[in-house]
Length: 414
Ligand SMILES: [Zn+2]
Image (cartoon, rainbow, N blue to C red; front, side):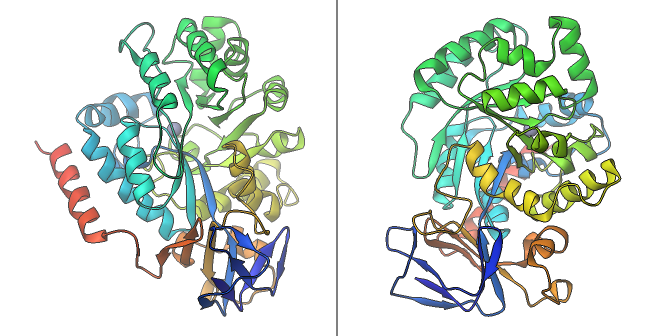
């Protein structure tokens, strides 16, 4: 397959070059076969959503206006308690449709029933790092959870799915659970997906309980011995950031969720300056309330500039890297996030023929400050067209809608 006549993002530049995709699903120097005319379009690496709870499409917008702990306890947890593996599959498929239509081809997902989620995500043609949520609510409850986490990581996964370990957070786990999870991971050596220092209260209570910050505490227990990706990190200290760089822990910035829940703003520019890998995520869409990675790029840029009172902070290219190659790095993929021969053909083709995208003077700026997910015309994952101007060649959207609507109806039945 050859994508012709487009602007192609090659490194930190845009060039008028065809993008060839070989039969192996990788970017090729040259290729034959089908030609797709992409005149008036931009071809860029597909986006990597580094922190999500994708099946929360089922509870989109629920509990709006509540602070984090009340939002979880009063709005989210009661509905989640009713969710079945079938619901998770329907919510995951719905989220995959939204992400693919918005140019996102890889997601790091943390949610219940990951087996059902993995099957649905793989079926939709997306890549994902999934996990069994590791927690023990302060000791032994629910029983057997650590064993389930290990079982999920050890199990064979469907196409394009990777199983990682997850520790929900310091506040939903005991030191014993953290240590046991870290010990179990010595065999698998996977990066660990964790919520860290999301709110001021969580950060302060950890210091009260353990005499150290969540990042220091988790590192001391060995949780990040093989790296990891830490969502939020709003309250991380300079010492935490130095630890993250040392341990290879990615800071996953979730600007919309942090703003909507009133949590604050992560020190992204400082983290980058200190050499920490920084990626972007949407978080679940009950605190977002969509899975639009372009919106996350836009907010990340504005927030960093506004907080620093300095428009030179966080360049457009730094933001684009966060949403592509840095996300890929966080999840352990060296084969995606950039367009170059031998890289996996995970691509987003963006239609530039829009009022809000004209004129094309500075494409990097347009991507970060003008584009929306809905500007994506086509998404290619592993060389396969998985979204094409409103159509999903590999999915029955009517069936997905019927399943999703039935789940929502049952979950919210009174
Ligand atoms: Zn989260």
